[in-house]
Image (cartoon, rainbow, N blue to C red):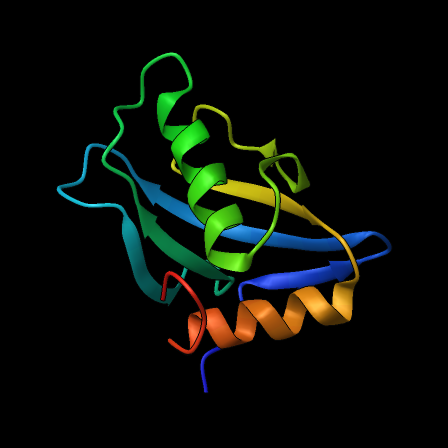
Length: 110
């Protein structure tokens, strides 16, 4: 089984993402391993990587997919990189269950 691209922290989850901007559609492309072996969630957004548009589209898509408010999804690293880390605020166990369901295709947006 593929490893999960998220880790629990005291106030939520940290989600590792590999973002493809300027895609034909916004969506989930699955999980893959980075060259160092760490799992990342591959997502694509239609927005261009200009003035934070792709990052805004990313956080909005993740929030909608996991049933969170946009303010509960924040970019913690990788603002100008394709590899990013997002912080999801909330109960770590509940968020992990939602994220697992989404990645398995059972959740909204999956």
